[in-house]
Image (cartoon, rainbow, N blue to C red; front, side):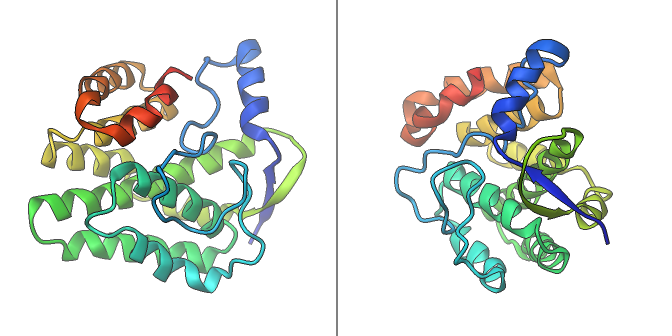
Length: 221
């Protein structure tokens, strides 16, 4: 099974490269900017976008991630936990497969529209974040760790995560934070029309969502 490097400061370099050869949104938007959760609990982490805690054991990841994705966890706090979980899980194919399976199982077990929407979102957003990790492999940059590319590709061969996210948005049509997340995913997927529409809808929900207001600037990056 092939293990290849993940890249040091890749997001900042990608944004520089984009001015030369790629669209302005080339930096993987689900990875590059940690989300401001206003102190909501998440997985242990360091100070940068790609600084997992060296003391954190991957044997805890699946249980900790499921616990943190409680029904009352705000969408943006979920996004940060899933961002961290994807980076941790990408190091170990067995952990990655286990976490992906548990997130899918939560979809099957969910009861009620709101709980189903969150389960769909979690499963879809996790998969889309894995997709951003895979996109980083296009670039030759200094090393900062390793990821299991074979396991990533196997997970991404299944249903596209954006399908799950669209289903979640339909179930919670008044949730501006879900639209914020969907806009970032659409930008990552280079679906410009969807990204613009969803970003506008997310901004319309700002007055009622203080946590969204702390993160809305990411749509302009």
